[in-house]
Length: 324
Ligand code: CO
Ligand code: ZN
Image (cartoon, rainbow, N blue to C red):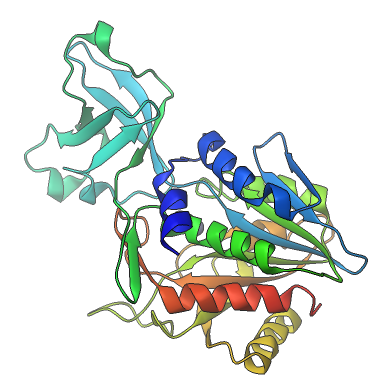
């Protein structure tokens, strides 16, 4: 797992600025698909032809980050959030701009932890001469968070959702002869409102769709009550804030898991949504399900997943695509 997942998580791709991560994925999958294209929104769409049903697998490739809004006379960079940030946890974090410039987030408010106002934060790259600042309004930066793994688990920034991209890539490489007409879509701008999924689902026009993403867990001390546990297998989505999954798709996913002895668990996530939410409302509606990787500390620089869950999700995706 190390090399590919490390490359995927450590390549930055904040929403709306997915060029670098898209290039990495395109290079990785090119020779395994029949057609590959990028649409106007920046979605990467890989087609593996078949004569059966049109099935779309989607994983978003963007990640949360910040966007530069203003640079003051002393070189301190003000910023806004791209995606769901926990503002009170930002002080002291490092961010990385596209040219590799690293900055640290500081606060001008000593009482910051009480009010947690993003307008009281700035990024300090240690350059006070504004003429020498290699950053401009609208530039994005990603959070820094090294990739590390041990025997059972992986910790990194951007596992949301490069682990989903990894699952799609692995499935695409391993599927040899497919009956169904398969589209592997690496979507843009999920973190700012499922935007890429909306346009790509319209153009692909699938009969069935599966979104692959991370989900919360309920297995840490004082976590909210939730049935999902890290290490208990692929999570099959029942519901989140964006979708009530089609029950025939969900039941099929459970059957496929049982038949192939793939460990699985049912997921209800009360916070947040995924690309499944946008896809199932496309055109006249699409029967849609979700495969989720149980993940702790989502949207922190140290997201955590279990290797066995990732493997279970890959197996489920491979065995599911021709079952429709
Ligand atoms: Co996310
Ligand atoms: Zn996600």
